[in-house]
Length: 173
Image (cartoon, rainbow, N blue to C red; front, top):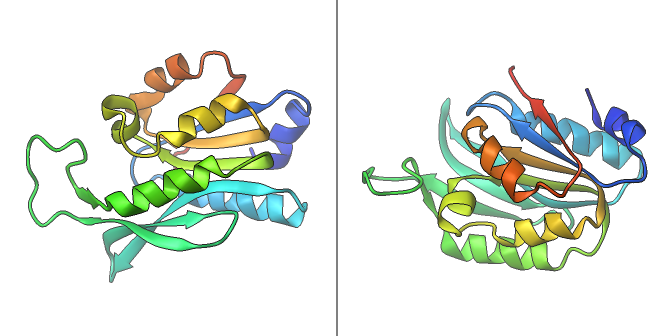
């Protein structure tokens, strides 16, 4: 299923699509494909895309892309040491980049395609991370919102966004 199908199914009412799958399943790749379709159609695209940074075959970081400006910043790097009480065990998040991301989300007015890659434990369990994404999604000033989320958080997302017309798209590549 692609973006054109989603637009055709519900052209008037905003639609949030929860993109779910395990780590490495292709969620971000699928979002990139939909962004390319939207660009070809001349649609206004906004939001954040998180892409992997590799050193050889090892994922060593996460880069965050502002989809309106194209600006990129490194959001996370591998933790030198994993602490059991950390919310995000594997990644050390850059608080300045999270702040930049939230400021970027605050500036979004209306768009055809909103992408939030991704909302995770920081956002749902500790009220940290991309908190501005919640209010932006709830404003419904988009035609389609692609929101990347891990399977373990689907229930939390559905509860949080219960007033938004939604669909769940599972990625298993």
